[in-house]
Length: 283
Image (cartoon, rainbow, N blue to C red; front, side, top):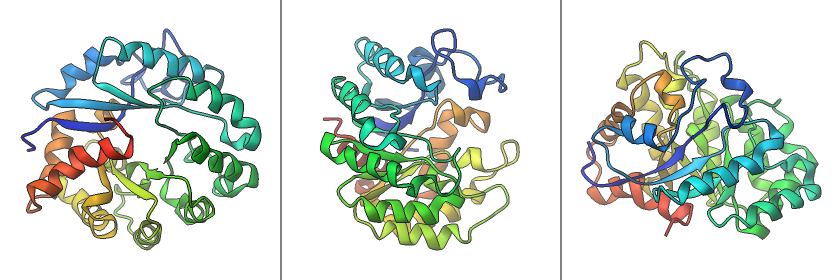
């Protein structure tokens, strides 16, 4: 277990009474408020010093409302150090209006437009690529949230946007439950060859069997991420509260610590702390 304050680069907060999130409406465990005080309780003995809020796939028309709400929460909870909201990047140049509005929110560090819910050609459509390219002008990064079937075209997207800083959420969501490794393994290696891509080690438990996963199931995937990206381009993410479908927060921290056992304290601090601060410019 880590014995220093960590930085969590992937935390969700929501209140369905305030903003609508259609995807949680059929999931009773998640269809309720998850607020900073709930996060504190779920952290248990784990000390989290800073968090990055990731957009929660609310109804699109509320994306600015969501970002402003999180910014207001940050006024009373100083752990909230960065915000990664949604933006309609598929609109290409027309997305500038949303990006201009987001730039006015001081804590916004990047953008996430979910790719996982789209077909595999979505991320290489010309208008979407044009929208992603705009992020470099705003000094915004882009969170790549995909399923493993999107990886091949994600590589093509990254290749076309060399000036954008990318971070791959949830290691590309391989099918851990069924032990799938190919072609995820080979495609992740290709993606890692782009120096502007970082990998977020998060969400693994929700891609495993929620009710019967073992840490040994996850280790080969973590080992491969480490071999591809190295300790300088890996960051920790808790994916709270989605990950509570499969495990409690301290157990995920403990599992990743176990999987990285044998690495130096310096490298452990990079993954659980320093790399997240540097990538999202948390200060």
